Image (cartoon, rainbow, N blue to C red; front, side, top):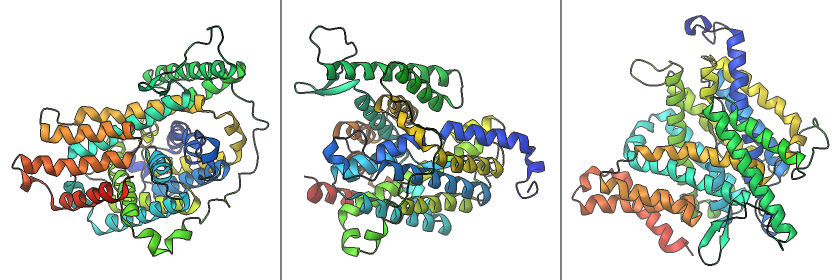
Length: 458
């Protein structure tokens, strides 16, 4: 095993790799609570929750998809990188595809499976480089930043820090409960909002002090504090058999065999968005983590790039079958690298930890909107950092990027933000006399997204 994972070449050992694997798991563990919370529509009104998969089944699917994807990356790709259902992609699944576009969640899973199948083909055929060059850098950064703002907005809304307002659309929620005449439900909402604010402060402090599992620990401290003040229920038990996977397992096949449901412009938008976000997120994450670990080749590329990207794609396909949104590489893997992880054995340890986590589902009883909100907001902050990389001094680059970033949270739709940016970008270039700078693929996407607005938007 030492020889297969090249311990001597990489200057590592079992002890260091095990510590790194556990560190990566702790940095990623928040997804076990946040992903089921988002995909099950736990923050939506009761009459809408029937349109979403069961919380328990999504938890099991999340843990299994993360374990399988991470083990694949460790054994097949031999990189110290963990995988799990991606933040942003799960928000797109729930709030855009199912809630806004009113596509059944089973059909949405079929879209995830198709996008990851295409990703696998692109990874194995070498078309990856051509596609990366086709999409402007400014739009890549804008998509990531816009999703970050969207996720942060969801966290603020779920916590009650931001609330609806008839006059101004949104406003600051109640952050005090000392006003006379306040109704009990308003007092409870204010207490939960303050709990989320407390959790956010704790999480920021932990991360600023370089605590690798800061998000996970922050959620844990928030939950314990909520229990102390009677805002979070104590779990009835700690260990149990994993929740049944039956409600979600294989649900995607219901639509994969139905061409009339799959081959529509609506589904084309869904598949393209899943593919686009996963493709560039995975590529960027793999390169970033491998660079920090000192594993890049002399030409700046990944070692075994085909196997690494194929591991990501296969994990996504498996996750769709299990019942979760797109599984992808996690930038939190840098925590394990910082702890000394250098080989695929780090990922193997992380994958085993996800399998063990299957038996601790009762602890998820402590997951409330106030507990998950800090994690959503912090992840949003990290993703929004890409705003700095947009070429703001070049208007034909900046304006499409700005619209992409702005419209995601304002329209409550990731697809709308992406579609707007991909329509405006070639128009700006043509009007400025730079039509030849635009890749032909961008013109094709221009017409696809234009059709989306003309025929599909209500």
